[in-house]
Image 1 (cartoon, helix red, strand yellow):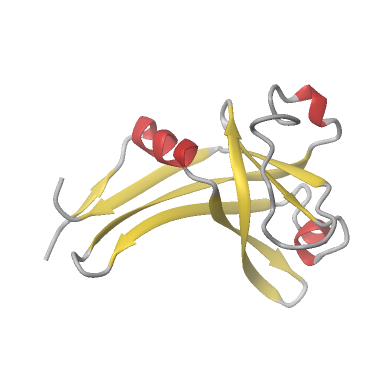
Image 2: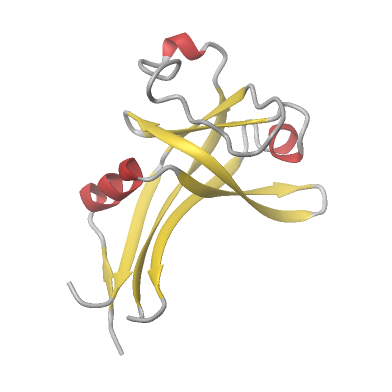
Length: 133
């Protein structure tokens, strides 16, 4: 059995920056929802795209959301997770975010128009790991 170890903000940021897929948790009319999204990090914020008329696009703007990434090794019983929390902001002009239109633009895997960009400037960034080293 391994003890959980808290990750520093720097370790959390490094793991967050290295990833491309995470999960957004938000409140909808019928309760809490968690959906996967492709994302990128710029500055102290996570950026992701969705459909303007989908549930996430409808319910998340200007609300508290959580964003999580993780990596698990079921055989070795080890892994880590990083959680960012804050208020979801709609990005009105993606040209205001350096690199977002080019190399840092998150590319959704899901089909359909996903032109609504969100920014999550984390108010809190925490993480834990379980396992050796």
